[in-house]
Image (cartoon, rainbow over all chains, first blue to last red; front, side, top):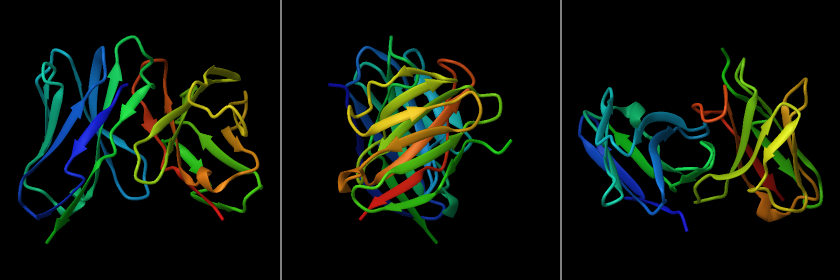
Length: 114
Length: 113
């Protein structure tokens, strides 16, 4: 069964600090992995998308890594800002499936405090 | 470009009533997808529609749920005879074409009393 597990469930950090969120998946065969940011009461917004051959991808202060061998990904946030407070969702797509048939993690709820 | 628009943002229904959720895709997008997010769970795919056609409804419950995307107007997700277990956030996404990037709406929070 395709699954995506994220840790930690929630995280509180001080403004300006860095943090790393983890994602483990069992989706097979693997196609791509995405990280989404979901603000409270809003829909998910794509941050990064990585395919099998990509190890790292950056989007501003967000850097995602992917280890397709161990089926793990991480999202590193640098110099956090109050506006980074949101849920961060790891989403995996299987090869051969439609791009919409996504397996979503439950998300990590990040709170950045002053 | 207003993005994917969903309404209402919040919907309260009593058990047994019908719920209608609307989704207007981004301008130029003809592919619409509905997802459901139960409390403390990840989003789950429900149905994929293209104008006037249901492409994939493998995630839709077999009873009480239906979806349409008419030639004119928004896509509608209809839930008949709602039960408490239907309480969830329902998200719509749209894309320009198959296998293109998905853009999500802000969701409709359905509460069944």
